[in-house]
Length: 404
Picture (tube, one colour):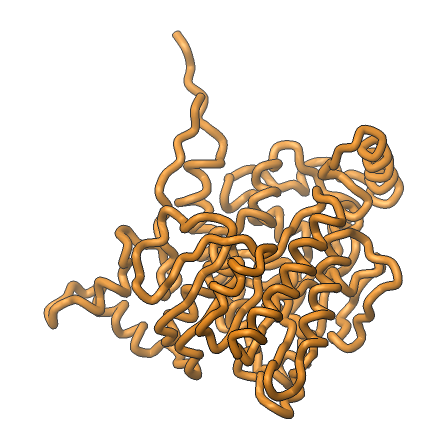
């Protein structure tokens, strides 16, 4: 059976999904003085929405068509930017609409001329673009995540762009052991990286932080941990796709920090505000989270139940973690090395599903003024709504038709 793709509705500034390109917020702004009660209530709630400090008028977001990058582009426009270049190797999303403030620019991060064009005229570059996933060779990761970052730095110097906010990753500080409430300064770069992606991101981050001269170019690195939300096609997407065969690894009690996409983008925007001569944020690494840690497996389980309506994973048998799944991951890796192939099951992926990974983000609060802007339950409601309305018709289980 052929699955039909369908045009996704944009995620509105109010957090809801609406019909049409403009959404409810656009309709409210154009409505007459006589409006239906539900729209009047929405207008009232929008009036009471928190105000945020101004953002630069001219911005560039690399990776602007991706999950985080696209939401950041939207939030910059919502907060007053008049020109945002959304730069990505991917084409403009079909459901993106035609906002004159957004310049959708397709190009290659590894091509200096493309990067030059994207950065010219901007006041700040948010460098979000990266090659992710565990399926590539180190040289490919380095070409995009390190050399691509160097291209951004060079373009900013050439065009007098004074600020770079780099999206980094906590995996650059992972040594494989449990992380229980550590601050950013307590996380050390390991002697040996657990994966090629982390190594390449670390090299890119180091180059970006080293480029900060305290006056002409100011840089900061801001990372999320386990980011999720509407349009997430990596984290929850993969668990939902494999829901039928998925089982809990270990006892299912391991804690992790998670970060709703709007909260992370808010942290990235605050990163720009913290870039000024003498700022304590210069050249530093920060992590944004939703606040309190959650148990990873119940978090995943809730997604499977709320989106797919399937029984809890905890009603099924659990797979022993360190005694079975980890050795199995090692065997799969070894077979992959012999065959020259990459498999999803690796010692790294198993380890990430078993260890504690939660952080104390107090430094991001102190230096960036970061606090989550969307509470966990509201973040979850928006996420589940999108997966039900937009993800399920394309990727969800197809109805079975009885033949007569």
